[in-house]
Length: 391
Image (cartoon, rainbow, N blue to C red):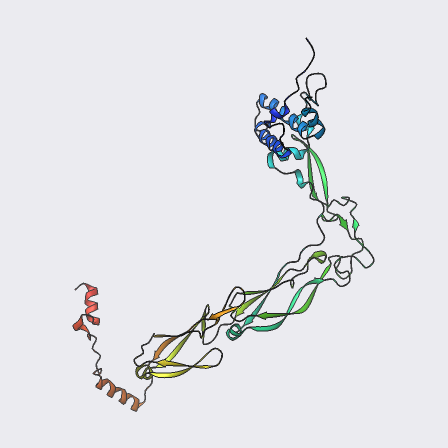
């Protein structure tokens, strides 16, 4: 009998077709490794199967070995009929392959490389108080802000004039250092940022004296801002690129101006509507009147009070409120002015006033108020109380 051997079916071991792509092979290996790993499945058959799966993955991810397989050969056949034999399956792979199988990622963040010295700047916030009148008309102001700005000496490089950054000798410019440890999984490679260059991969031998190598300094400056009409308390106006300059001279963030609306002594605001309480003498409420009502802009608007107006009555002046500010910053009409009538009763009367009111009460038959008025219709006060008591 001859000594010919049948090549192992590496594709079949992983359960993929011969034309499977690298991603499909990797997914198959991950799935099987999760099921067969000795820490998950301690059965001897599972360990042997895991060894076969690991070997098949090692072969099919090596272009030259896979070419031999596709030609019908066995790249691991050493003439003893054992292929890779019963060696440690982990010896064929780096720790990253095992981490790929279980977590879908590389060990210790491999391949990150050095981070950029140039970082985007943070946003800044400043609050500005506005009166209700200013919120209604809009304002334009100059604000004093204290933010990080580009260093004028080094233009953001962080280096003294005539010098430049140098590659870090500790990490050889990688920005990270690696350590190797032994574990039950084999060699474990972990990475951490280089403490010398702080993950940048380069150091500044001669930092700029003005910014100490940061590429930016703090400075107080003036910024113009236009607040549109119709803003309300808590609204923010964004000034692009006027915030903090980033480290290493990175692009500046934005500056936000937040409106703090000062409460008004007369008007109360509800969105675009304004509310005002109007004290009205009882004589005007009884007889009616036309009153000049001051508006927020200082103009006067006639308010007609009909005879017999009661306390708590409401009158609405359409379009006399605040501008409606759309999200685009444009004005879309105005809100209303809502007038709440508060009928006032005099607390001090002189002799003549008292006599006149008594005469009016006599004429109206109200010298002694009758709390049962309306009882004949079943709506008097006493009738309602009797109904409440169930009698």
